[in-house]
Image (cartoon, rainbow, N blue to C red; front, top):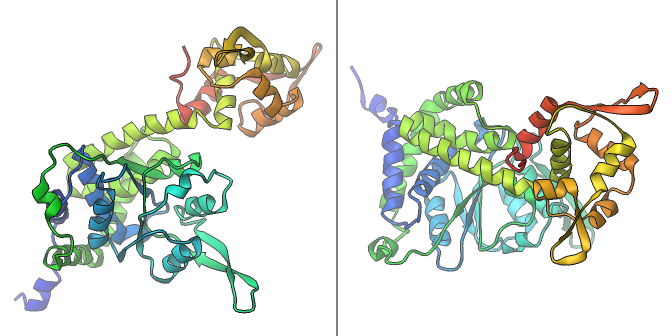
Length: 393
């Protein structure tokens, strides 16, 4: 016969838990896209299983004042694994707490990331924290004798950042799942006036998640592995950052999984457009334009001439500034003056193209000199994985 202990060890279903959390959020949050509630619910559930994944996305809640991002962050903190919401925190505080307790960290004031580029140490540390293999950072902390000692912290834990502005670092943006929240005209005030401090609501939801964690974590691992094998169409970083939410969605229902798949596909297009504005993307666009009509066999000098040859039309309303012909053809926002400043010689161009595997490492010797084979299929495969190929006219 079953006893009371057996009953206590029965876990709720994934769908039952999802619907309970979704309902609690829907009764307290107002969003412009109902799929945002799907993301918030799945993210809260995923945090309990985050050690099972090799990569964790940063959930970025962005919106102007009174857009509801702080309320959404607070609601996440009530359900997520060891959820804790902080205001403006220093890097050492953020990383020390991550190392100590593996909190789900929800940080309310991160507008300073709008000024920190990809070379900034804090931006790079946040990026590292997304990857299990890279999530160890060193922070120099002051001592009473005024000396500074580097301390190593392990920072692989769920993280939610709130801001009114876009982050400056493109690599950091590529690791984020961003929800753009806005104040809604005629918003349901009943929802917005419901307290977020009612533990009779949040406590049972956490109990459900702890039960799933103890009794059904293998289902998460199995679904994760299945999606790694079968979920196609999303390259690299996009797949990595959506996999944790997609795994939980796959356990809930096909309908919820379809929502996440749709959001992931939309984010891929946005990420590719975003990546078009970084340095490497210029080289991707150049190489793709060179082979647009087919394979090419070019010398170092010919490649550089194509790279900097002006189109003959002004750019940005300044007659002294021109775009290279390939830049005009691909709508790349770069002038020949800047191209020559960044890549000053044919030797440097060849080195950069080799770095991105857009040309072979070794040239072929011919009677007319060394020449490089540019393979259309290979170049388009590489370029498509990073920025797509929609820029080609």
